[in-house]
Length: 110
Image 1: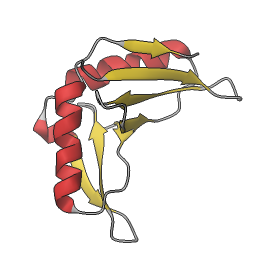
Image 2: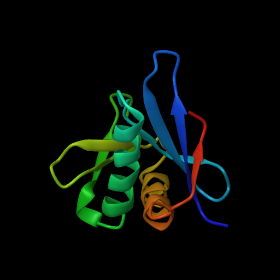
Image 3: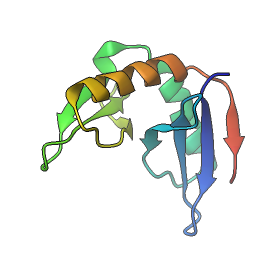
Image 4: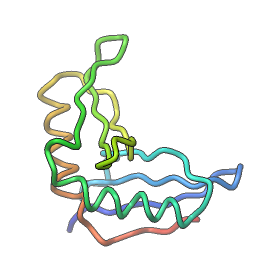
């Protein structure tokens, strides 16, 4: 089993997606999109950019928790990770996005 995307529509008729690993853990959460087509474009962008090391920006929150964002080639943020307890855990999260980001499986809950 491999990872998969889950596409959702919120109560404001906006769309977002999450990338889940094969163990069903959320490993990347998207920005909010105005249309389903834009959200699907975001998913395609994850597929294209997730294998590229330079697309990951490693960050630390104000509270000192490591996390990362995945960016497109134009520098726009595609999605962000959860907050991690350590740098090693964050780096493992990046590896998981690299491994699962090219999946074509989408669970459409919109």
